[in-house]
Image (cartoon, helix red, strand yellow):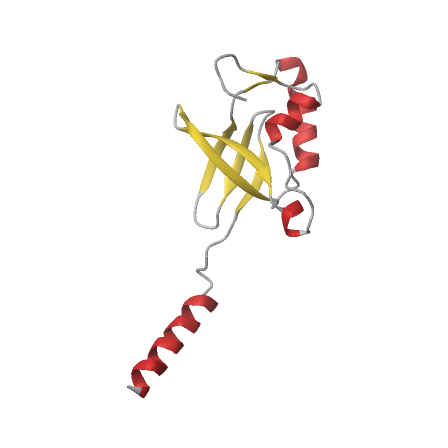
Length: 126
């Protein structure tokens, strides 16, 4: 019995200390005012911010705003709402503020709309 318990403890320790532990999704690149490149350690995803429209005239400002809010390697929470043309559509919020004891970051789409850089798409629950 002692060897079995030792084996379980050793196995659990190796599993928890493993470099294969789950990693949070991180921002790799802001590609446009509504599209991000996200990585989770194993895969990269193209993610479109849900329910948003950014005009071509406001795209450069929206990209700058997103880059300010999401420096490279920022950890984010993805809440998928679907997919479109093979691209994940999701609501995205930054996780660092929660880890630092601050209030959770609002959805980035809400931030873009509040900044006047985007508008909500019709027939889409904001």
